[in-house]
Image 1 (cartoon, helix red, strand yellow):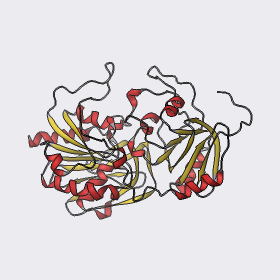
Image 2 (image 1 turned 90 degrees about the vertical axis):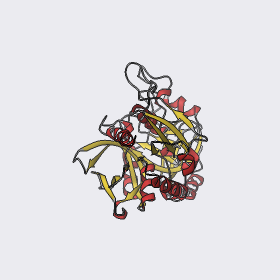
Image 3 (image 1 turned 30 degrees about the vertical axis):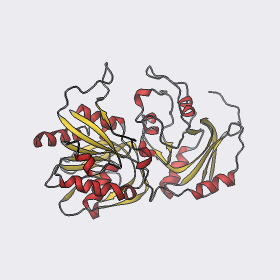
Image 4 (image 1 turned 180 degrees about the vertical axis):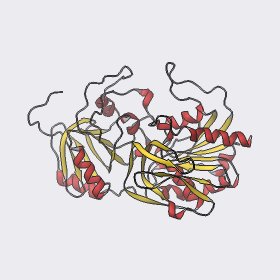
Length: 384
């Protein structure tokens, strides 16, 4: 892709502190206001953009080759992009991948998502790490006309993610069944035709591949909205309950999710949570969550399992964390981040109830954490 020596910027990123980055826009035109984070993954940009956990966020990709494999409907984690926008170092090139069906730019444009290229992402990432995740306004105008003062003001006016219940915005509208299993060569996706365990999954913003992993572990999955009551969950007579990932402040979502989970715990069923589901479980058990400086977003995060001593390479996407110092009696910390020591897993000592902060379904290891789904199936088999 060839550009003029000094092309007029067609996009800009304005931070709440008044810093402005100029670059070249692609995808949709217009403005987007959100929290800015960075992701260090070298692959999976499509999965990242369609991960409901990124609601309310614009993603800076530290890896420069974004767009080089195009996009394919098979890799969407939900029906449409959820991240508010993307920031990249280099403009997307023409895709080189036999699975590609569309260019990244066209895919973003068709789904109303704004992107900016030509940005010094190293400088931007340093700023995020040092100052915390900033509030920003991203604008794309092919004519290059920007009201910088207005954009900075929009960024300053953004409420931030603390106190926001975003799960209600990304959850399913009604319940549905799921039987699609993990992708495998050469047949692709197949169906679970002989399930052994009946699972109810609470959708706080569930990624499709989590549901596939449950199906591959032998589960007949029924997905219920985030607002589901304990009575609605138990009416399905499940063998186990799964708590999904999702966006926003866990304390805000916990206002209605925590009482429901506490009722489920009284039923003495196996319970498994991932990401926001991990935080929901921790809150239901009496722990607290805290907002992180810049969060964990990437596919190269080492996590140590205290119980086995093994280190797993994991995928992460969270801006809040469980405060391990607030874990009550009877609940133990099972996993920790080797980057900063933050909590990455818990379990009840005397019951089949456990959760992890990282994303075992994202396969960065690639299969380091699949045992977590098998453990869930084993717990349900023991109760059968």
